[in-house]
Image (cartoon, rainbow, N blue to C red; front, side, top):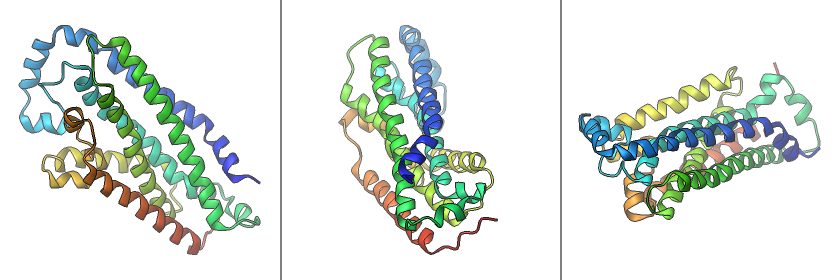
Length: 263
């Protein structure tokens, strides 16, 4: 039994659904850019009426909102939120699905090690995330070129778009830990929404301070910095990578040693 291919097939509908949803959001948001760009002075005046703390929490950069990348960086925050939900759902589903569906005894009595089972499941879920992100980035670039009223930095645009995969990977890794620590999660969607929205709100509040940015993956990428420097802040990338690695290590250790009950 090829667990990887089986899991990949099981994720097929989920992958298609989330990919279409993310591309649809990008199309919806970016289609509003041309009319906003035409009335940008009035739009900026309206944004300036927001308190500075609110603008910072929402990721609003008044001075760049009239550019393709500036507008995209603001709307992208909500696209990343949806991508994080997909990743968290996949992460939690990885090892808790058999417990919920009471098929763990069937799977674990096969002549495969627990490590191979978990690796196969991880690779299948990561493939799903990779497909979603590749299609999304390609579609986003095409949409941006259609609505752009002037030249824009493709490098910055790609870095903003690729941050979806960075955030998704962190959320996915956190989801795998939750799955092995709490294998009898009854509602994956409810837990995923709760955790992701929790980090999202935490990022809006704690992210107002520089040190508070470390508390939420949504604040690991400063889009104003990306547009200005055309690179990521690598200290946050290192922290994100450490979180991912630590979560995977914990998941393997716990999954290999944990008694898995089917009832």
